[in-house]
Length: 624
Image (cartoon, rainbow, N blue to C red; front, side, top):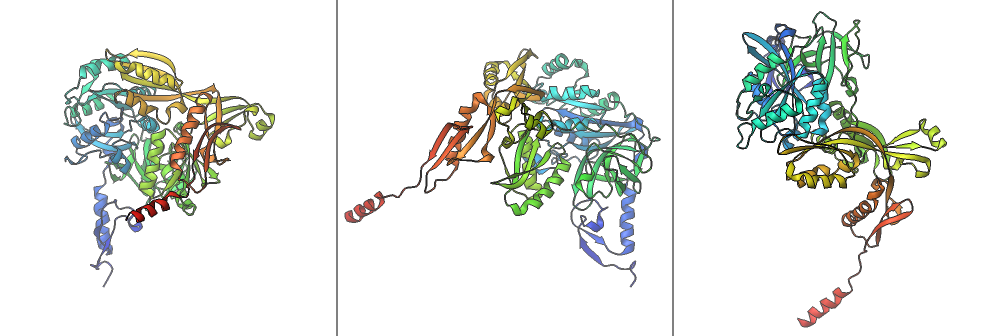
């Protein structure tokens, strides 16, 4: 029997390596006969969308930006439904939030894109939407997303009004010179006050009231007006299909079967399967295996043209080959690389070690793949006497660190030990020997073990941030006291309306990184919002505090703190350790020390033989 005439069918999964061109999905029956396979793949080729029907003039690239929980993802769901991209069902909640951690926490962590097709006044438009995170820790995702857009939807809650992250995101879009469309969401709520929010937008952002669109993303009210405004106000991308290929890699993921999947924005020319392309970053050559658009799942296309956003698979097997911000161009047609992205500046550092050192290589592989998808994390090799070989990771904030750790556990099934978070300090050296050793007079300290002695340093510097707090006026007194306790300096105070106040403070980063946000929410009954941006370094009276267990310093528990907070912090750490360390048959002394000076101590008493127990037992037996 010939191969073409075979009728044998095998149970296979679409994610098998031999079927890399097939879309991911559930297990199905597929033919193994040659003719049957040809019919299967030819039917897939017929489904490919012809992107040449969408010239540059009919393309709109835009992002949705907002404060946390103002309805970005719900609005994205309604836009996908009204354009027919997804079927309209009651189960459409956070469609673009694909990560397990996003659905569990109810927040957007990764910026996700989708291509929408919409007919307006007889013209077919291609609308490329990017849904962005709202928390300050993921601000880098927002800035990267805006680089692929020409406009934004600025979503504001009709009940809560303008919040701290709303202000920060507005200025990101304003500095990028993007068209800004204000959208007031949740007008269906009982306490909604869209008129008040419109006045806030006009006062803070100088956007006329008549440009605001009132919607209810949950009920689908006025969603069509949003699409019409996107087409009318946001300009098409400035590029040409006749130019040489120039594509920006703005995001990437790793697929175990297809390798690296790069999300690209095409700024010139066109790209299709079979093209030979070159990476400007690595100078390596690749052959394109597949191009397509996200709807929101991958949909292969014949080509991608200038102005369009989609994905590309080109046989990149190593995670280091698809650098975010890289420029791709055609082989033997070099172009000037695009500016790319400003590298993220880590605000929090923590040590990460495998629970079992035999899992070191597995954790290393997981870190490489996850940092491909989250390029804002910095990784440096590190080692510890107590915990073994590991890494020192830099994050944009504490929530970023928690989410990264959770993704490692959920997506790669790894268990790790995380040390206490610290911030990067600087020291200006005065010792000629140390200056020669480091090759510079100013060093950055990301690990307390590297903290230089005071005698060899002219001054220490600590990082500062400019914090923005927006709160109802009745909580101003409590919040000012909280900020003063955290060594903050007030810079500005502005009433944005008769009920809400915007405060700006210069904070030492170390004072806000761990529990400031929780304390602020507690004091304000959850109504205050907080956002911050980097404000450089300032001189500070810093010291290194060691924790001694029975006279032996434990490097992993060392910390750098301000001199004014030394005693309180040392006492707190000793008390916590006394509760955490199990009692032994010998006495344990827990001490906090600055140099050779002990500033706090707790003693964990030893177990003792219970000599009274036998007497009690004898008494009970006699009485019986």
